[in-house]
Length: 238
Image (cartoon, rainbow, N blue to C red):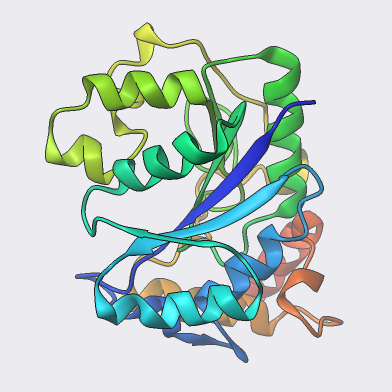
């Protein structure tokens, strides 16, 4: 059996949207949305929240502890080292990188990517961004890479950017890796729309979207299968 770990990378510092992890998104801080929705994944064996030792990130630790999700605290800017440290302990077959600015991340898409990766055995697979004509809406999925791939990144990444942005080295040297990706299902085929929260404007846009969604009580209740319907409502009310 493959050992699969998920790592939510999160920190409070953000030049464009300071302390966004604590921003209340219709009853829950953004970090809660990401943790709760990721925990619904059926294929992740062990989930971690990786943040830095800076005291401002105590809030993130508090929220992870609330959900009994293991915490790793390391470097503020060398995010790659956080993944390396966790992986040295866990020796995973597959590492799932989850960005904490994706409050509507889909557990279905997390599992879809894991199953795709186990079947096709790439070095790296993704469905978190619209790239290479995969058609995906930005922010609905995740990234998957093997422990050996992580070791290659660690051994070759020398720039601060490569250490801060874990998979940037792969994208800048894509021909050196076996990269594969699933194609978006029609319900998520909106490559020009983003579910990311990078700025306050993004936050207000996602809040507006969620306000149009009915019949949910908890963040994990929201199924992105209905995204076309929600976007249609937004368009009508624009």
